[in-house]
Image 1 (cartoon, rainbow, N blue to C red):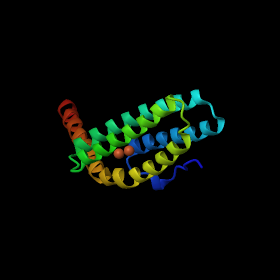
Image 2: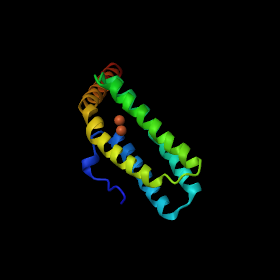
Image 3: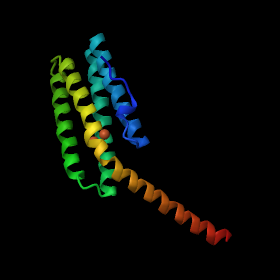
Image 4: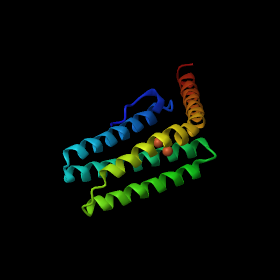
Length: 150
Ligand SMILES: [Fe+2]
Ligand SMILES: [Fe+2]
């Protein structure tokens, strides 16, 4: 069964929600490939999923660091462990093993749990930091406008 994107998967930071939505779409694509049984296609989707997820992790890590989120290191470690797990699946798939069923199970369980627990946990700190950064930018713009047109 494919994953349905619902508000229960949102953490309230639009740029992150959009990335999570995209990851869910990749996972659903893996499910589709499982039905069509095209090995080439599976390897392609896996590559895309891994690349996209790793850049999502890096993006999240920079947001957490910028916000001074106290569990940023632990969160990054969870990302690294998961990336290793998926890479191991990739290797097995490249070696010709049919890992789709097992991989789908791991992806769905891990992602939903990680978003709702770990990602949700940093959202308040990151949101507060983003709001402050916007305020600072507006203040700078205000003074620039002030000097120029005041
Ligand atoms: Fe995430
Ligand atoms: Fe995360």
